[in-house]
Image 1 (cartoon, one colour):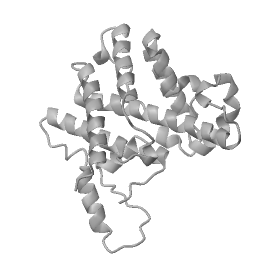
Image 2: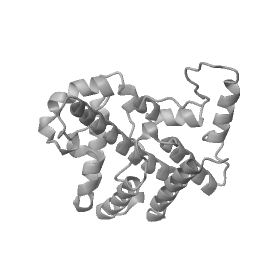
Image 3: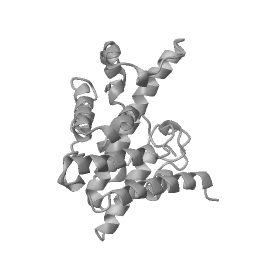
Length: 255
């Protein structure tokens, strides 16, 4: 019997991605569109990941009213070094996804705001164990591309739509989500691109069903399994690692 809840979540995610594609129709091609959507999803995830990590820690310490997202930037600098050591990156409260989203419609320099934030995130990892994972992470997210619009105002308008579209995605808590939201989004976007290019998409990723089948076949009869990775060049898992998801989330896909 099909997992109805999982399928509903997957369908909802696909509809959200398609809605973004509809908003940006004619602006960027499928390949570049993939970079914008995944980059924004990742920006949202690491913002929530860091903010929740800090806030939960303070709540457990007895500071029930603490909210990292509501703090002033100057008040959190003392946490920077320790957080980078623990998490591998750092984001100021004002540069968190949801705070940027609030001001985005009225930000006439939104493209520069995002460019600065992405640079700050990458720079925060310099000198840490995660430096290589964050280096150039947002290089494919060109906020100044003419394909987003011929004017700054037009580009920012589309960037606002992109942020709103990703904000509308029901990603939940990724660690406990019933589907691999990032992986499924990647596969769906790759399929969209391959379809537009008249290709099967097999040269860019391994479909999730195939990966799961191979994993199950490779673990038949085993009672204790540490982890299973598919690391063939160009495969689905490898590309997800390229975007830093495995390193940052710290979770392995298990079956």
